[in-house]
Image (tube, rainbow over all chains, first blue to last red; front, side, top):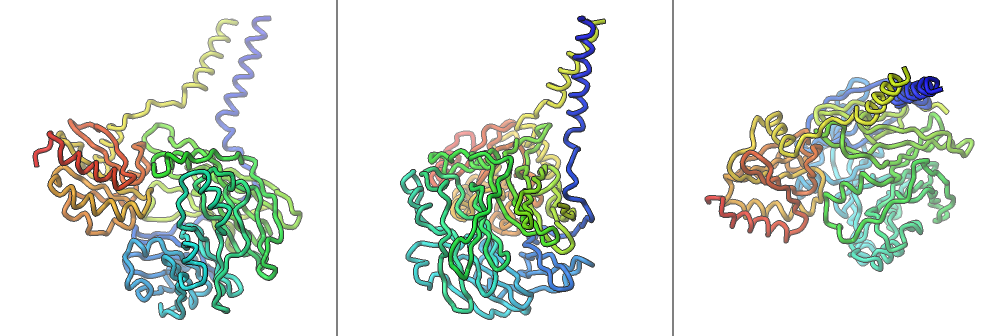
Length: 376
Length: 155
């Protein structure tokens, strides 16, 4: 009897051991790797995003030293287009230049936001138009600022901006007040030269008096509408420009999602604490549309142990997951987990496939990207 | 036979629980290795303030605190080393009067040294003495004042 029990225990443990060693490699084939890309760059170049016209795709790099916006052709990795930014930044210090936000509509119409100014430049870097947001009714009076955290988007003559308000939040009352009053998205209608904050409010989860250190949502344009994703809300909010209202909500909950702990008011300016806090909480992040699969993809930053085994370094970023929502069946079809030791939480849906940035030990001299195809 | 099986089981359990937990190096070891590997330096014997300007932090803090540090610490500049990984300060002349170690690959940001915002690694006798964070102008002024009045430093 004892002997049988011993054998049984041993078998169980061997099975456990096998799961332990191979468990993490059992990945779903919902995304299939189809290509990999490596691009050289120097530390003076900051990656901005991706642009594609009818024929080609381009990586957008900001050459900080030479103040150029470079379009790197993904076929031969040559900088086919380099737009000088001197006109925009001639009076700006380098430090401000770095936190500017860009949106390439076409190489001949590039929007740049710098502090509360927006510029439209052409391929030669000539300023075609500029807008000082502080000149618009309600902007300065409500102490609004353009946030550089969420990328600009542009659709049908409307430039979408993430907005913060310069209001003190140091107790539950002021916090509740902020999230009740502030509308975190603003629209600059460049055709009508008008500015307004659409009725996109923070979800009720923000209006409890607890602070989650999260002030701007993520958004994309899709089907001439604006899809807005808040970090601590399971829903996606679809804003219709014509009706000027939230037309629809899509429940797009991550299986990993857990309500975050409020950030302690006493630790507001403690950045070491903040760094640990960011690694310990779940947060919804960017949302994307993948045309090839007709899926919405929602990124989720997951709680992650800061330490890398061995203890000689820490994680660069959180582990993350990607929720796949099929727009045809209106269902979540899967949620994929990505380890941040292998993949950065940065992806781009392109015509060539879903590009996901690899985590590199050496960050500045190259970017390595895996390209995937989404299979429903 | 049964004892053998229990012994094997115990070994497997031990592997599962302890097998993947290597000993963690101390902060001094981590910093020593970093200085040696990336800057060909060592932690000095005399008191020294390694001031880290990392990518992680608030831009407003950097813009206000750094000029204060540059001016305030001038009498102690032989005891100050800036380690700069923040991109916007890498090609900057701000630190030209000081010992300046640029970290273009942001290695320092990802070492287990609690680096966040402006971080001071104070060293003495080839070891880390303490790690401080400057999160306000008051923190910055206090740090400068304490350093200037440190009896161990000959100005």
